[in-house]
Length: 185
Image (cartoon, rainbow, N blue to C red; front, top):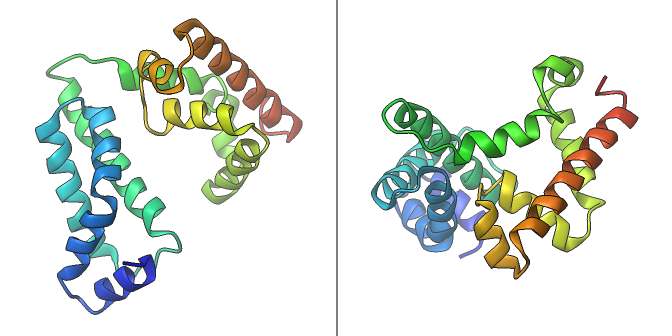
């Protein structure tokens, strides 16, 4: 089913909207949540919470890109669940990935104070559009889907050291990109 029709089901308050969302994006959402939570049961619960949050937010929201909207909800819920879980059990995958980006986009450098969220999204989209498809894929696998270095290596059939080098260079390029735009000191 087309995204616009699924959104219309939400607006008409038809429960079939959740079924169609799960049918089309369930695997996508589960991948996002599992990569953060590393637990099948918690990932499934997170995806179910995603559908509830989508149900409660559409309307009034009318997402332009349903996949991105649902993915963002899933990611945020999974990160929140992870934060609650991390006090009980330490798994540093998420922290490591986010710390890697912290050197480029951190509150210490006032990037967040100089621009609003929409501007940051546009800047990151422009940055990503300048990357080759392979490098963009690796960047997103690490910082959006939160795959480990090993998983990225296997998914892209390259060595782990090559993945680390590519990510290091991409972070430096992002830092330089933000400096050129006057957003990084």
